[in-house]
Length: 77
Image (cartoon, rainbow, N blue to C red):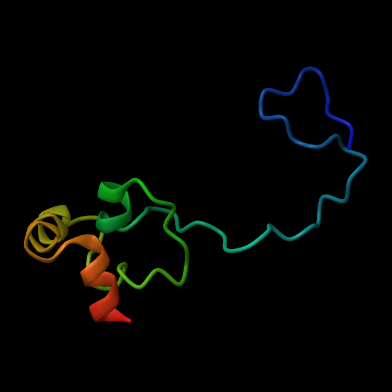
């Protein structure tokens, strides 16, 4: 792959197809409160997103203190 020297993002040069689909899952516009607090990438199929919207981070903080992130994910799956 060729990289343009003036690109700050290290993206492939224009010789690659611009219509390529992104690998894996595209990130959501705003990560859910859980992913934001855990500093994770929030994907479209995030099991935490429906229960912890970005506007209510205190909900996840409280649940995380009581149950822990791993147990919350297990409960929801």
